[in-house]
Length: 179
Length: 242
Image (cartoon, rainbow over all chains, first blue to last red; front, top):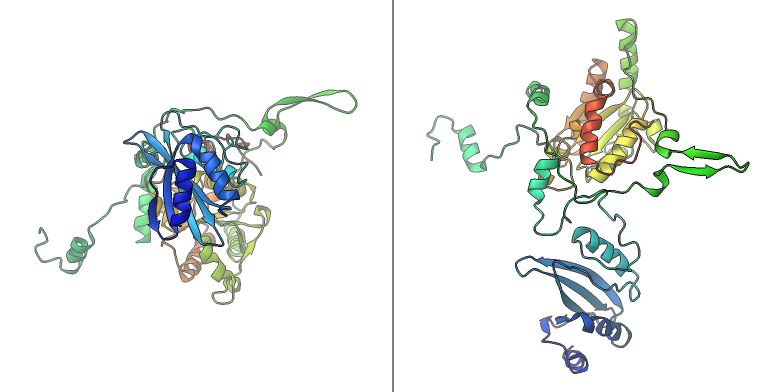
């Protein structure tokens, strides 16, 4: 892993790798570095498996973080490639031509985070949600509790009791239960 | 305890707060195959097609009146209670609890309960657990395709008050807003024994002539449809499909 990391760093002028385990490392890249790096890892270094493509909403810094996790099945090691996107114009180049499965991840990210991947197959179609009209629900500024209360009617009578106090009240009703 | 629950159910329609309509951030386009269009027949005639109007029957559900004497109605109810055919439609994790019921360990078949693959052959819809809005759409269509007499059982706390999905953006909280529920079985999840007990209670309700969900649906059709359309934003099906 260490030799691979130093090779990659000299070849692509990458920033510092974060070595999480002996067989798992993360690196943050720029938009231009991403595609050549993924291609090199897939074709030359044996990272043939796209394990996942996911996003994190860093709302405080106004960025989305995309994580492309690649796996080398024979060596049993993974490399996560991170990429930061501005939150207000969230759009990224599609990688569905490198891994066809990426199209599915990208559809999900488009629906749940509102990150656009132009030219990815069927990216604008509904994926899991049907007829969703609000903010993408995985964005952190989407308030799921508020939405749920506004959209679906609560059943009256739903209440929560502190288990200890409630049992004390039930088992020893004569005692002083204030404290 | 059961009476309390029934009282609670009866009280609710007056008190229930109206959910606010949220302004939509985007419009939902009608599916391509449902857009009205003009087609040219082989003989050159032009035909105007509106799929939502032309492909489905427009008649709504009707109330089924009881038989002319009490004794006949009792006979019917006895027969109905003894053949509960469940639609094999698992909506949530509760569907897992239906599998042991089908197999020799708990063997619900000995009570005259069996599972059928299509809505046309079934008369009991078990909503087994949480119901997302997407699944609700399918559940409504399945329910409406079932033939009278038909019953709905809500299984697990998710169907009663949302359960652990009480703050979910995509899961309904009260099943009886959208479908006429005859009986709820509590638990998260209810064990197969609880389900058997529930089916037994449902049989008693049917024999007493109290399982009138389908008639309730027909009587309050407008209210059910309003509630359904409030949560299903991409309503692209007929109001009643059977």
